[in-house]
Image (tube, rainbow, N blue to C red; front, top):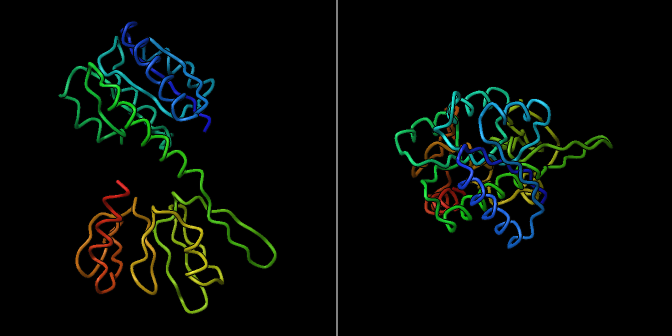
Length: 233
């Protein structure tokens, strides 16, 4: 996988340590990585405005005039794809990490094994975003990113694909669509498949999604649904 990774930290020694660790991780996992380092949030923003194609950002929190949390808030206004990993010596900002949908919060001094584990998760999420559901209808084809699919519903000879961008109704069998999905999805019975990233809670009889939608859960599938949820996260 080709990855563009940024390290933003005003501590030069820490930056070099992280860069070396990331290079080791990339080599061990056969990733091609372009690594850029920045000593301030302002320096990163300048580069980001010119070339915003970063995949992963390893971000210190306590820096100069603009701290890492403020930078993350700026980035999240128009970018929900960037995998932000906070790296800091303070634990008082954990709640802020949730506010900006940070992938993880690593404490200094950073343990390499923990860093590698978080980078593995980031790479998987990036890979998942690149996967597509291909539907063909009336001699035309269309690609739908898997990460945008909230749930899929069978309606007689059709399926309705509910996505973050709206609904798409196509003549197809649910089983045929299911073959194109990955382990980020779970079939709840005869008529529904849910995207695990949008699941809020699971009960014995239903799965509730983040938007409040309630999907019926087939008898005897509760344990399997819980395992799928835990495996995904």
